[in-house]
Image 1 (tube, rainbow, N blue to C red):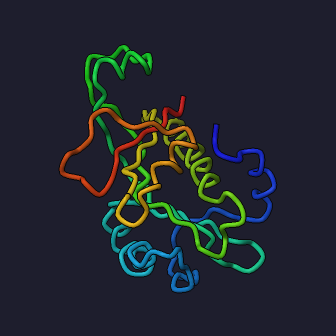
Image 2 (image 1 turned 90 degrees about the vertical axis):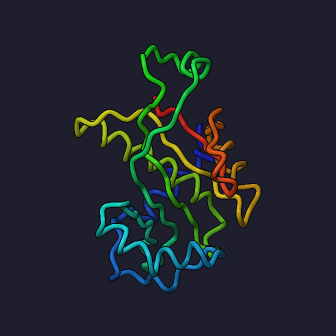
Image 3 (image 1 turned 60 degrees about the vertical axis):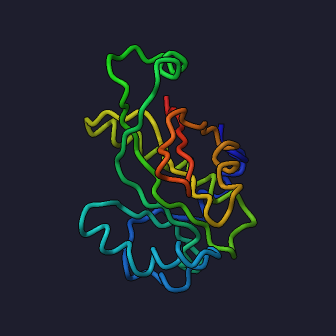
Length: 182
């Protein structure tokens, strides 16, 4: 399902997914986007304290580098009747729950392996834990940011995501996408 998933077993022993902590070298992280770098160093702590999102860091076990991060929160999105039929959802409402990836970034020094796709794969495990805790959630959603890279949706498409038919017209800088986790 995920791009280069066959490489994930090789990545697993080299990394650890941890909760955000200012004890990590946050300022060393550089994904090439000042906005995404600044989020990690300046905004993430406040958003976490206010329960707006949680941030997961992918740490290199050998040197403590932050390889990647993702900011996660809850969300919902609308499915029109045709999309519900396609997803085989016989429900009387159009809004469906999702875990949202608010930000996903990989350090420019770690582009040699598919760490972005690996993070999406790990997000499936986090979604499974949400469901096991007694909270229903079927989809992973993302508003694919196209402000700096217009090809961002391509990354999500090659990892099994699809566009939502209902796009928020107020968000011209991103495209709403989803992955059915079941």
